[in-house]
Image (cartoon, rainbow, N blue to C red):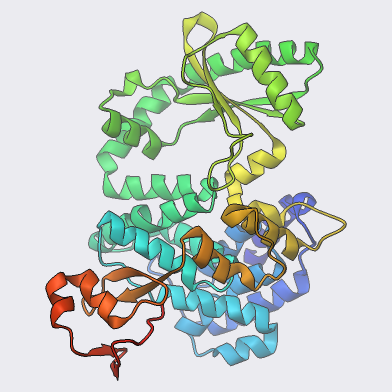
Length: 439
């Protein structure tokens, strides 16, 4: 049944996948995980195997490859069972073993600070430590399922995990453009940390949902006919704002719930970039645009490669209406970010190279990456500049320039510490003050 559920998700996304999933290998990984986790249960009382299968389902929803699905199924075997990394490599190959090892290492990091800069260092360090971006994707899927089942944990642990999710994992998903996971992580953490406020906003949204969705549907039908008249085929739908997003807007801008007019936006999917601009022309001829609300993220994508045209107009009945226009490929990137680029078939290039090209664009589209192994080094050197991340004895993370020494580290702790520094220990071993620190 569990394996059937996983393959149902694989099948759902098969048409968009870059390559078919090797079901036999996935079944083999499932059998291995079942055997090793046989006597284990989750805090919820479920058989432990439910968790790795759920993580693999999230990865399948991102259209990730066979190796990633196998690693997702096996991601807890080395840490939580008698299985060794050597066994995993012998049975599933070096690539799967490296992914499992990467996830195991990331799981070992503890988060002890709520300070914004500290959280940013952790986010950077997680990416810097990952030898393959798929390690981060598995880790995000792992956190998502843990948040979905967080009710089984003691209250104090729930609060810790929810805060960690808002500080570390949701921003990391945003950084990589994986908004589908970012939004769910935020809402689950919000529900845990502020249950009353969450239920209040949910109740207010539900009260007005039917009326608001009806309004967007009516406006969409009218717009669809007008677009059709000029030869633009479009798929139009409503997009409800997420609860944490509403809460953030209320708190940051000091607004009441009834002052937030973009609770449901209109999404317009068209067939080409040309049609994006054609559609915005039609929209602005039908309804008056609000000044300062038009954003062209097609010509100027966001840092995580998000693309769309945004506008807010005075729509039917004189009500403000937020509209987003994008192509299907832009939509997939908006939902799944870096993971979306496993999806597109290309006869000239292998899926692995597509992944590298997308990362190249994310980091610096003027440079040429030729090898998937350049993932980690480029991410460190270009996306976050060249940095190393080191722990203080208290477990805090300090960000230093590549090539930094223990003396540089001492000065980041405090000027007086730097002045008085005469020696250093790294991982319990005495090193010279000119020693080059590593992450």
